[in-house]
Length: 233
Image (tube, rainbow, N blue to C red):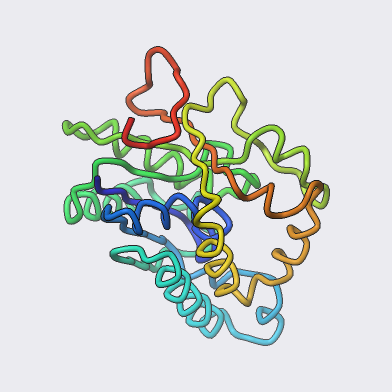
């Protein structure tokens, strides 16, 4: 199986479906990570004393560290404007995504849930781009949206997250055996350590929060919606 994950910023993969990406990478599947910006508009930590260009370089290096920690087969970093994806012509995103799909020929695409989890406009824009891109294709490419469950969203007290409604969840992947890889990927993003320190205080403990990752298969829509613990099913 070949999986391509498409996200907006460095760290989206680590705080997102890193356990799933690691699980499939280490199980002999080909996994490609595509990140559309360098994260140069970040506001945490080093952003206080670095230029946008310097911050973009730093975050790209952190992303390379994360990709290595997850053992993904390939990494592509594009240079669309961080914080400005929603203002771009849709074709800018479609072109990159179609080119990446054509080059890698994945069986499945992973991106954000439509609400973008945190509500970030870049996240929501990438979700729209990916859905439109797979709808335009004639192959059998499947699209999975990653997000937090309703229970996970309730447990995060320091910010409001928009979950995947429980009835829309089609896949729950147990990543307990791959948590160390996910944690290593998160640690690579030192510029985002402030977010990590807050998340570690989640109700019920961080390990229990991270050990399952939730997806909704949105294209083609499964009928009926039967939950699985494997993306290939």
